[in-house]
Length: 80
Image 1 (spheres, rainbow, N blue to C red):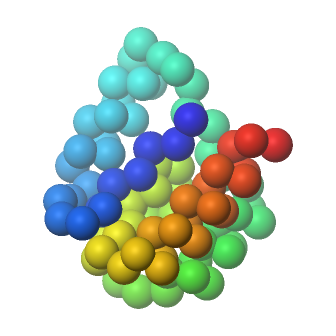
Image 2: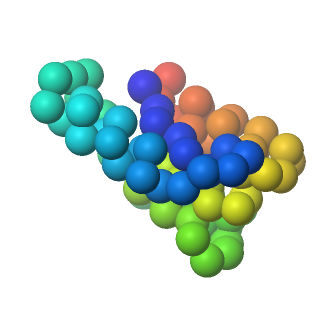
């Protein structure tokens, strides 16, 4: 499971609420691996990006290229 915010418009408040709810009632939200965080930081190197799990794409979520590559990284990480 991955929680991602910053797709299109919106801020990190949604992702904080979703993560807090999961922490209270489940499911467990595991952290991204160091490798995945490093790749996300390289891809999304701009202010406002939070590459912990949950992932906040900030303004990068408006770019289809960044969104697609981010999803590939995150989905690859959680499917292992």
